[in-house]
Image (cartoon, rainbow, N blue to C red; front, side, top):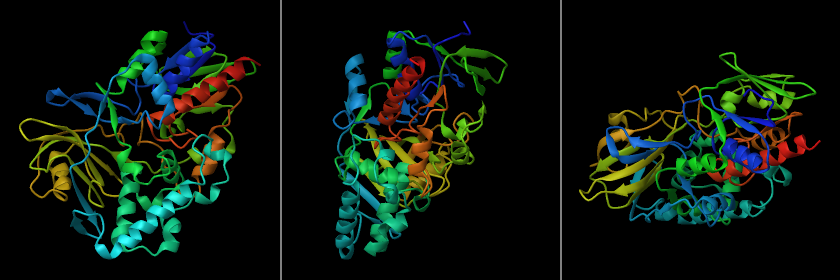
Length: 433
């Protein structure tokens, strides 16, 4: 069947599947077109290369049911199992070029206290339950250096902040807007410590367990290998055309593709000038996340700093003393091939000099043409207006995805789910005209 459907959804990540599921549950006919060979978007788990007994989580992994109501609702609805992470037992930091067991020297403890308070106070201006672009917070859409300029921080404290931002953005921390970072602090209960303590729960078997349940129970129609090239609108409906010449007719459309590839879809009539300007160039998010089997590291390790990897977290500890670790880095902070064992080992040894990386597995999202980068990170001065512009529909077309989520949980799976809810509501308004 090529239509007419009530809605065609472009992209089978969390946002697209959530929007499609909600519309089907409301009695609408929906088809999902996915360019790639699988569902899930930037959530991706599969057996570790060469180690079929291990699961490699190559994209989004963590959730927090206490803080994220959308994910909590979905997990409860489908009865999905989660595993609780163990707390770190040892820590290493690289700040001001020094490997430390405490993040800053004693002379900068006052600086650390001031930046924690400054970030907390800024976050209290944000109401977590409201859309970001509806709040008077445009002045928070600034660079990190502008944000901390009044504080006169010492070099180690500044590096600690840079490393945390790089960990979460996969970007050069000085080139990323602080707005989403401050908003996430609000989401963590206005606690800067939440950037470490909120990483608590992961899906048993990967996030695909939830997506599979959503697809199966609502019997969603998904067409893989359908790479959308053009979206045409008329007064009567929408025609979505793929690169191989297929077309689908519908009364409405949800575009839930990453914004780095969304800009390569041809729209007729064209998108608003504001949207086109924001989509004209790639955003700053260029993260990588190697999974690695490592030995000769301390029990329950955690690392953070301005190394080639800006953060290292524990995945699992094995009986033989080795560990499955997750590394986090980004092209803007340091160049690294996340699939190269020797390069990854050198990055880990910056924090743990005796470490031996036995195996590494990763998906390079930055070279994957279906993504061309990771979650959206805006430049200073662009985040607030980007969210406002992209959450405006284009007649029968609405936009979804964690890239455009207008909440404190943007870049998380919670943000994608929240965006999917909003997209389904938007389509319902269109169909009810």
